[in-house]
Every structure is written in structure tokens, then in C-alpha cells.
Amino acid sequence: MMNELTTKQQQVLDAIREFQSQNGYPPTIRELAEMFGQSSTAGIHKMLNILRDKGHLIKDDRKSRSLGIVDPHDLTAERIRSLPILGHVQAGMPQLAYEEKEGDLFIDSEWAGHADSFLLRVRGLSMIDADIRDGDILVVQKTENCRNGDIIIALLDDEATVKRFYKEHDRIRLQPENQTMQPIYVQRDYPHFHVIGLVRGLLRKF
Amino acid sequence: MMNELTTKQQQVLDAIREFQSQNGYPPTIRELAEMFGQSSTAGIHKMLNILRDKGHLIKDDRKSRSLGIVDPHDLTAERIRSLPILGHVQAGMPQLAYEEKEGDLFIDSEWAGHADSFLLRVRGLSMIDADIRDGDILVVQKTENCRNGDIIIALLDDEATVKRFYKEHDRIRLQPENQTMQPIYVQRDYPHFHVIGLVRGLLRKF
DNA sequence: ATAATAGGTAAACAGATGATCACTTTTAAT
DNA sequence: ATTAAAAGTGATCATCTGTTTACCTATTAT
Image 1 (cartoon, each protein chain N blue to C red):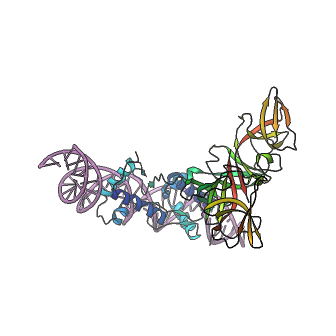
Image 2: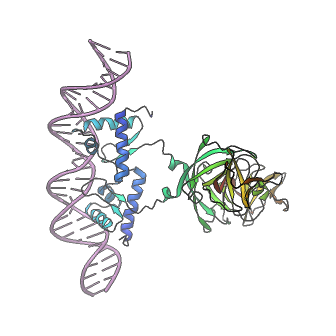
Image 3: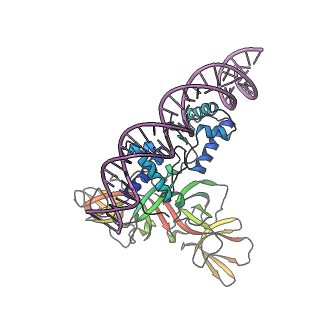
């Protein structure tokens, strides 16, 4: 599929794209034929079906102006996520509180390929030795699965914190990356502890 | 213009938007009427003309599926930049290779609001005390104007470096943010020194 | 050379589509 | 309560539009 195109087919495809961006809606077969100075619609009609078979065009049978370009070069929509910036994560798992929303940012899916992601603004210096600063924005993948050493967002007694995660025997160690701060220990069955997500990325604005 | 809309008119407008993004082309009057469970096309037809008169809709008379939403509720395109990841900066004295394009990333214009921006991957630890790590990606605004204390990309003898910029009397000090490294001094009229850009942001992937 | 494919002409058909008229019902403002 | 605008019904009309058939021409691969 996505076969080679003849020059004529490429011209038709370009004409459709041009018309679309010019008028906001696709052309009819007759309008296309007219653009190329043709007196019949059959030629274009055949070509459109060929273009559809080759995978370059979307075309609904028997519907007017139903042409849509399949542009493999414009992956923009696929690669962009709009994620909310949460200044504050509250209780009420598994649903996060979106009331404290600072705004939204568009993120390349390179960072937020996972469906359930959000952004969290860092408060404090508890991860400064991991080069995460106060005010940085973290890209968080919502998940409860994490391994030792992962940087996670934990919800402990209705308070969200960024820590490094370590499972130790019957307890969990939440390790701040800050030499001046002490680790937090949580019993494994402590009911008011939840892992909210995994830190996948960091955004900083100077 | 852009008069107030009744709830019904808003619903129709939303339905057109929805259909458009769903199908890639606008709906017909009958398709709209059907969506709202109406048996006649006249009501929708009137409403479309009203919406056009109020400036919310583009509609070509006598042309099928010629509806276009005016309200660009989709500000996505405005807020997104596609920036190239150029070259890399190596420990201490790296080279900026414009040919070495790693790829592109979509960035929210919150970070790259300026027209000429690009991305640069950091190599080395020369800015580790500023919490910029090896492998981080910097958002760089192409400019020669910088102030004391700015983190800049400098080109010195065909080599690119990330440093903090300080103007001192008749020379310029390029200060690495690393206690183990020494500053570089450049005479103000030295011909092989240029400021390429200003570091505006930082992206990190875990 | 021969055959296959792409591209094009001319004509016709059926259903899709926008427009319109007369009239009724609902909604919102005075 | 009264009234004007908005919203909707049902039917009809003219045109637009996609589709199809038969036939022709040019190009290209075998």
C-alpha cells in the first residue's frame, strides 16, 4: 500500500489539498475536472478510486465532497497531547482533583505516549539532587506499577509528593533526593498511601 | 458582529464542528437535520443563514457541504511549534553540528514563542550545578542579545558550548556551572566568538 | 508488435442536496 | 399577556453530484 503515484495522480492529490485549504471543504469531482480543463468527470472519478485504493485518499461512496487527504507526512495530530497542569494533587483516588488546574500544555507524545498522563508543578527542593528544581513541571504517567528506583508521585495522607520509590521487606521507602532530608517509611498495608504515577519527563522554563 | 447565540444555534455549530473533525468534511443540511431528529431541512437551513449572518459560519450558496466554522476554537496550530533537535554539546568543548539533526519535537509555544528557536541536546556536565544534566534537551532562542547571568549557547572557534554569560570590562566571561571547571575568558573584539542563542527551556526524558 | 494500464470524451441516470413556500409551534423579551 | 423572533413540519423544485457505460488515445512493460 501507499504505492507510487503517477505525476498526474500527484497533481490531482495536490489540487484537492489546495482546494481544501483554500475553501475549507473538499472539491466535487466536477470541480476537479474543471480545474484540469477536462470536459468529463469519468477520468477524475476513476483516478479518485485509484488514489483511494493506493491509500492516499479517503472517499465515501455516493457522498458529495467526501474527499479527505491521507497525509503520512502530517503526523502532527498523532504526536501531540494536550495535558493539564495540576498544581496540586488531592485525595479521591483513583480520580485526581482537576480543580487546581493551572492550565494546559501541548506535549510531544515522545514524552506523553501513554494515554493517562498529566503535568505536575514541583514545589520544594526534595528532589534537588536529582536535578529537579522548584517550579519544574513533571510529566507524570498515571500508573500504580513502579520499580525500585523510579521517581514517582505518591499520595500519602492526602498529600502528594515526588520521591524515589524503594520496596523494602514489609515497608516502602520514599527517598527524597536531597542530602538534608530524611526518607519516609510507609508500611505496605498502610491504607492512606497510593502511588499515583511515574515521572516520565521534566519541563523547565528559564 | 459575532452576535450572541441561542443554545440551539450553539448546538448546531458544535454539531458541525464535531462532524467535521469526525469525517474530514462538513455535513449536509439533511445530515444536520437528521442529527437533531428533525424531519424537515427548512429549519436548519434558516439557522445556517442566521449563523452566517452573525459571522460564525462560512456558507457558499448552492454548494453542497460548504460549511466552515469561523470561530477557530482550535488554537492548537497557534500554540505548537515543530523544532529541530540540532547537534549536541559535548563535555567542556563540544561542536555544534547543524547537519546532525536528531529529529524534530513539537513544543508548546509557551517555550518557543519566538520565531527562531531550536533544540540542542546537552553533552557533558558543564552546567550540572544549574541542574542541567547530560542528555537534557535545551530550548534555544536564536538571538545575540543577552544579559549578565543568562544561560547562552556560544560559538567559540567553531565550537558550541552552554555557559552562563557575563560581560566584564573589556572581556566576556563564560562561566560553567560546575565547581570543578574553570571559566573561559574572551576578548570583546575576538572575531571567532558569537552568541548563538539564549536558553529558554529544558526538556528531560526519564 | 501486442497487451495492459492510465487518462480522457460524451452522454445519461438516480439519488443527493440546497432552496423555497405556507403554515404551525415554541421560546424569549417586553 | 402580548408579540416578535426562533425553531420546526411537510412538500416541492431545480440543480448538483456521484456513478456508470461505451468508446477513444497515449504511454509503457512484456
